[in-house]
Length: 222
Image (cartoon, rainbow, N blue to C red; front, side):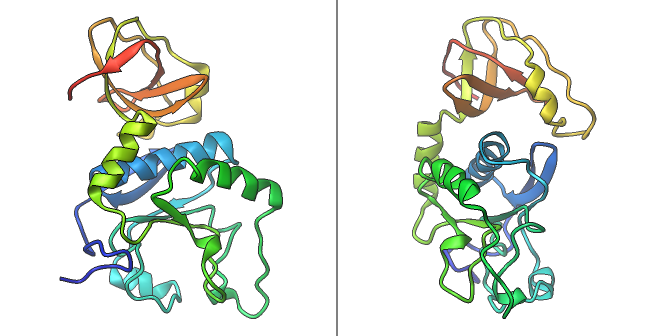
């Protein structure tokens, strides 16, 4: 069985996720949920999300110029964010210089400390530094990812107070159609899938892909 550098099987079942209107194909299941969380966190807490790229076929991976045939992109457990701004050192030698401003680095570190299961390519050894690249670390199991999602509050929750639409939700597009976002109210007694939680906001997604803000929830069942 062929695996990528972090030990996950290559060419798995994949799913399409979105963050800030940008879409990527990543490994189906909890890996997708964690990478989506990262994309949303990046857009809300670091800087605008300009590009978002995940799984690669063997041919696509080779076409990037990387010498790493078993890249974690092959197992759909890695994501590139804002690659146009933050190029890969190996393919831009010898003129490559660290392109990430110190202020942006600090914001990224602040996000990543909450998800230690995700590594950052900026920390790779030269000449392989890759500041666009984020990946599930070697040795991280599916169980560890699930546990992290529980800590982050990602999952199905039960509504105890009617929800409200949120103007900031217009930053996102619907998951299925890509059309302008529609915010909705959800009644008491319904379950919602929470994808991102901060001290001042809780982002939920309906089955139709609409984003809403809500509060007063307890853990529910799918």
